Length: 325
Image 1: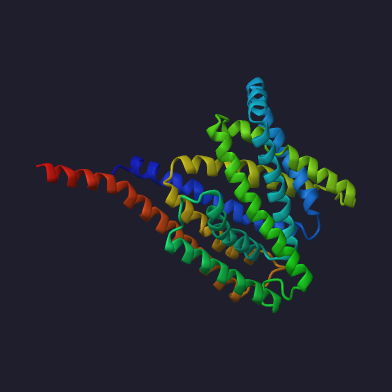
Image 2: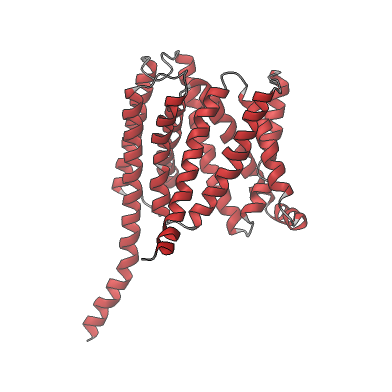
């Protein structure tokens, strides 16, 4: 294989990994920032910048208006899901260390998907290994919560009220993240481009965070440090990272993308070493590692089943040809 061919093959996974590194670093950065600034202040200012960028760089505004009118209910639901997701995750960081919060959010995903699948997609069955992986994630999450309640997390002892609050925020983030995926898929099937979605995705988030800011009177100071931090989150943590993810996904096999997402938690744990307020916990590492391995196991099981299903028709045709011969 030529060097240019090898580079092309490696480009997709490297782009996805770049997203994972940025996203993990952003989580730790936001976890430190919400100790001084309100989550709604950070989200409002960050996404005003991001929304302006996506809207102003989209050339055909007339086509955007037509697409939004055509798919208005799904656009609204994508907005609502996005708003809940980003606000909830920032509030989760006020209670938990980033590695713990991300572990709960990611770990809940497969269990929620399987549970909803019984109702929404009764014809599709979860694989035994997927169920086992989801169960392992839930067990690891329970372990993380117990250790956090015992004061073994990176931020020390957590009062019961704060623990429950953080857990509720993580659950809301997981559910709304599923909504983002679902409505993004629906809009894509309806012919709405990714750029059109991004240009109309953050309106509800901006409105909701502004209302919360006014209701709570939680405006922060627009100091040089605060403005710089918000711009970093918006430009690097949202605009650049989502671009890397989008470009990486179209160049990479789905199983590779899913496996690379499993590195998010481990990268977050490593990046936490650079946050002086956190004292690293071995218990958190064990939980993070268990969830990451279980996530890879479930992804591999689904890939293997898909490959087997794809090969079955060909095997049946070959068998039929042999019988006729």
